[in-house]
Image 1: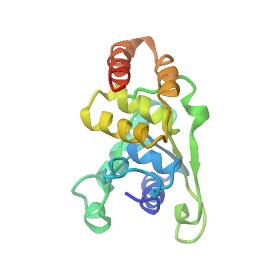
Image 2 (image 1 turned 120 degrees about the vertical axis):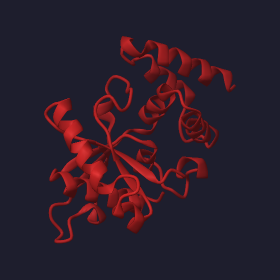
Image 3 (image 1 turned 180 degrees about the vertical axis):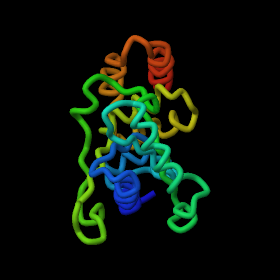
Length: 187
């Protein structure tokens, strides 16, 4: 995945749901913080972009996510044409640390604009350490590989990830414990 593809996905998702902003919650959110030329291959191999629509409640968010998925999801004509898909998510898609909204990374430029030039849509990407927390709490091997690649490339810090893991809501403490065990065992 490349940065221009991320920008295209932001523009497309916003147009599909008729909103000016979306949040990028999947692994490709890393492209908001780090240039693709600096990233290890393991961090850009996914060809799907996970988008969280911004709405007044989770029911509306889920409806908008379904619209995105239907128009640009896996096996869609969008994917066939562009070589990547856009997956819609809701507020239960990712386990995130306290304060994550205040650390979102803004992606907005000419490539996120509508064909007429306005509006210029905005993608709010998870900050790289918050993204790592979400990945580790998902408890999947591919997500651990993603985080490990960023750690080995010195693009994120284990201490910051641990600090953020400590702020995850009590309801997800089992995921946090397993994530910390993995983080400490890799040393």
